[in-house]
Length: 280
Image (tube, rainbow, N blue to C red; front, side):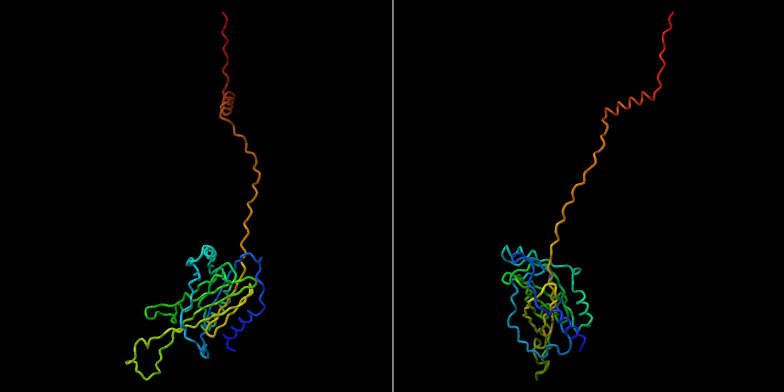
């Protein structure tokens, strides 16, 4: 078995098991730290046996919230929930080991996106889709005809009431070489027909998840690792009780200082002898 396939099998085994109910009271809005890694399959023949229907229209991501880009127009209640979505720094990533394992395959399983954020988890009807896109612009997402597209973009939506669910709507774009199999020569063909074009591959998938468990969502050309961890807000520290203070010594008043000064001066200065007048 090829090393890349062994890694995929190990990842798939991590997501086996019956899902557990989401914890917490039914009416309480729980917050979760969601972390994902998206990677592409780059070995020869990956996805070659699949039929890829053309993408007739782009997906509608207008209601999604972009991490770090503020809120989308919506009601005040949803805007308040949007503000609770917080992008987490890379130092807090829990899947660093899995990321290094994918990098060790020497681009056969190439990670193109690694993100983590904190969000409230609502019911499926009220859940908030998060817009994500790859930050690396590779040769497969180079500018074409004055436009630039990310190699990967889409939405991920985590919902939960009794169980946790993840909904994925992702697009992977790759450049396809021009078709030169026709009888027309390069000189007589339209230059726009000879330019490379984008081929979009869409993942529409859903998984029921367990919290604190790594899940793997598969696609012939790319894969997604998802981890949802319950977030417990730290309890506020109680202020320390004030310690009893010792009474401060009473400071002498200025009058006391003068009196004491006079007394000390009289004690230190020698007394003059009194001269009695002599009688005649």
